[in-house]
Image (tube, rainbow, N blue to C red; front, side, top):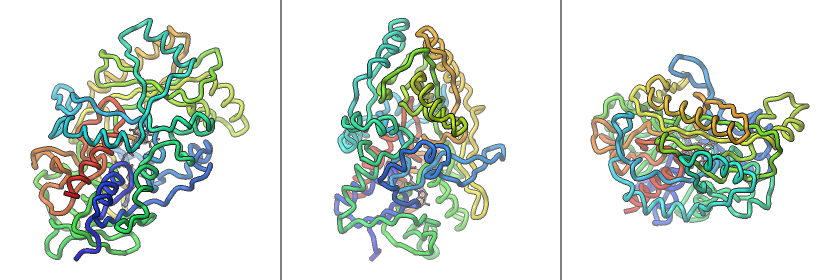
Length: 472
Ligand SMILES: Cc1cc2nc3c(=O)[nH]c(=O)nc-3n(C[C@H](O)[C@H](O)[C@H](O)COP(=O)(O)OP(=O)(O)OC[C@H]3O[C@@H](n4cnc5c(N)ncnc54)[C@H](O)[C@@H]3O)c2cc1C
């Protein structure tokens, strides 16, 4: 008998959700995480340490599609990227489960209703709530929506405790930082911590899975994993949840080493998506005393694949970190109180050419991704930014925008796409890899669409659903 019922590779939104479900169903689960536990102290709130020195970030150099080096914004630690995310936890709309051929969007193999119970469960587990807009933000948004009612304002669903407003450092620094108090919901605090002491759960941190192990002479049947330190673990089922930039590379390495081909041909790693994201900063001549700020989102039917979110206080301080050390305090006070940030997101199209490629051992991994393959999405994103900057100007703010670029991989998705057809998708509607036995995918890789909003609640929901399925 195998040592474990299920091995899960990676402890981010997806992996932790699968683990949570299976452990509570009594399965013997081994969760293997590449990175360490993060310290639970104020070091993860320090702007210079987090943003400038990148102490907690990935340092592995990748190649883009043109062969240029870049370092993607990935985080390897217990809880994955959820420790660093902004906890804006949205549901996709039912229409965002459908294909849209004219914009090159693949559809899901099932509709919103199938995921709804798991959205509901994730909403409760992550204690999602909304906050009232602070006075200055509300005044600005009133000006904008009164001048142009096509901008529709909604509260932003946040995985934040109401108590965070009593901790000004954390209220200013939760988006892009790990919050030591636990006032931000993430996959470690809200899922892993609840199963950590159970006898049927083991978590190994700081030892990456290096390869999949298959039955002798049968590379289709996965029986376990081998870690970087050489340790081998066996299980009846293995779940890839190492993130959309890593899970396809682990599978590619197995296919390459074994000579196995899948029914989908070379689609492993293809259809990679990460949203087109830009930050917009509006500068006002007046100082602003709001702290939380990230409480609202706006939509406009003229830009149906896009959203405009408010950013937190982070903006001013991060701007200041770009300046010489001696000026940081001055710029933070000057800009942080006058700058208000927005995050413009547009769904990127699916393209088989946009792909994650393992370089094999000793070579750099490749992220071949280009906006040239999605002209409609790029056009909508530019129009969205122009329209918003114009609105800001009418409201008395001068706006500047910055595209997040290749390194902005926060919303990585889609590289092991799910579908009904084994020839055009990599995993089936339950996350099982077509053409293989015992191998499932539990992270953001199967998501065919990115939607107009941030993806992690949908990844949590996908993971909970997979956990339910495997428990059954
Ligand atoms: C700064 C920032 C802000 C964000 N803000 C938001 C937001 O407000 N709302 C939102 O919805 N989303 C947000 N996101 C995105 C969100 O965090 C991700 O969509 C989500 O965490 C992805 O979940 P995942 O399970 O697919 O992957 P991850 O969370 O990346 O988890 C993958 C895990 O696998 C581990 N791993 C990798 N390789 C191996 C290996 N070989 N062996 C073992 N383990 C391995 C990694 O260390 C990691 O822990 C943000 C991300 C960032 C970086």
